[in-house]
Image (cartoon, rainbow, N blue to C red; front, top):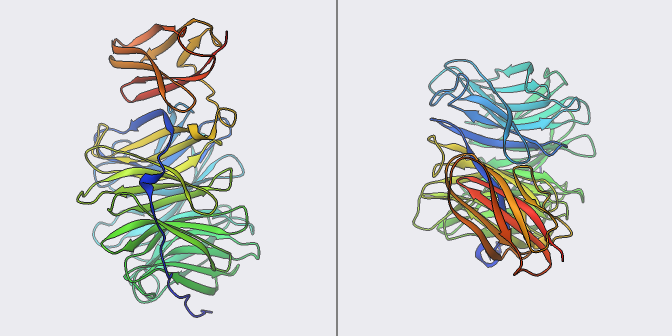
Length: 486
């Protein structure tokens, strides 16, 4: 059953993203890939500090340019690869768009597979692997000439609920939702939408046994595209739908549940000549609680991932556009619980760099994942970085240190020694920062050969307190907390 459409949003509050500068330290930053394209779309955190990324590769496995394999990588807390696996066959296109951890400590990836070139020919796929990436089962769902899964959630009824896009419905492309059991066997699936282009991006279970689906539509609404939210019951029957947006191109790319029982949604909303990062919050009935739009530099900005943080605020992975430039930068945005910006930061070079996902590791650390055309060794490389938020204060989030970069003794009095390993010969810097992120001392700047090194640290001119040492060697950035105590 459909209800009348919600009126389009009446206003957008524009906030200058430049007004809230981040006090962030890059703990490390790496590019991953080879001669062709590698991308990351989903990250799962592990309890031991490691994390996994899921996406695509054209450089490894059977991957080749234009015909990637699914690429699954486990990394440790310092960004070092623990293991990596590819999934695919020759002369085909496979990618994973979303991944979750399963109750047996394995992982489930939802995505897309295509073996017939030209228009159509793609299918939605599910791949279940164990904790080491060994494939346990693979399911391919051939519903039409072009289907894809974009998201998967555990279902309280058992098994999983998936969403994406299909051509089995009434429109050119329809939103698609499927319920499967724990082994990936189909229990039911339905298309949703009108006569044009409609896509589902996320789906989450609700307390009444139904599901909330978010995406975008151009079959209805006021603009070329509008944000679209609909509710289905436990059997997939639509109960209501609502659209949000104005007369422009307004789309949703991701949403997340919140601890207060509501949902926060991100995407892009057109405002005159450019598009802004768009965030709005709704209740389980689709009623608007608040909405905000953020304009970085008068270009096209897009929110591609959002999650609630430990203080009930939000963190967003976005693409920041700049007026007069065709390129984008990786953009991380931190909001409070009402959508007010706390800080933001961009990363990029001379070409396009995009943030696709961000995960909060603890109260002060984040893993930001995306792609870079500016750096790396291939056409597009996977770009991962670990960021530390210095604004939260030392007590709420100190550095934990690492075995690759050490200060001894620590605590120290008047002098100490830094020891570290340089992976590749080149320029190396070691600098000291106070708790506000201000550089207070340059310990070393110059070329070092590869291998282990020790650098003396004269701290006699510094006051007692906690400091942070940063070692940078090419793309490798490491940190160590240093305590000065006399």
